[in-house]
Length: 239
Image 1 (cartoon, rainbow, N blue to C red):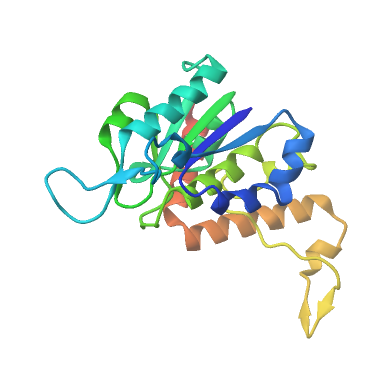
Image 2: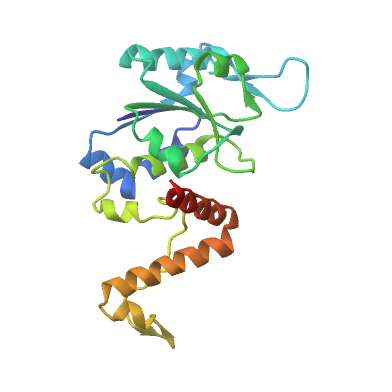
């Protein structure tokens, strides 16, 4: 997989992309992550990438020319725009979720356009963007952190990217439920004990306990997910 990130602030992303699972994934699988400095595609001596909005109003807008040039260079290198997804993180987009991460993990090429300041010129979105995606109902200073969030979520789903694929398969949301509590040694710490069932060695009882914990946790914390899970199970029984 190739991931290109177009940003005016590549240093925000550089260190996180070189740590932990993302660092290991680049060694384990065919994964290339490129940080593209948007200012390199400005043509004036001040490396200008933004301007005031037509019609007035506060904030600055990322100009179309540098973004078009950056995107054109990316696709000159890859030669296959049809197989690519161009993603613009924005509060106006569809909500990012696990199923979307799984879908994007199947694509050989992803391009992220990191907005900053007020917005990106709409012509860039109209001409290039395939997916406008939101990571939640809140506003951040730019698209770099949402992009990093999505890359981390997507990359760990690539076969071979993490050492224990079973760990990824049992994460929250993989089957519509939140995950269960986990414990490690020691068995007792400052009067706090590990549930007896986890020490029993009875794998069936452990599996049942974990499922019950997942169901209850989802019901309490995410009733929307719980209702959807119950409805899906009911439909499966009826079909």
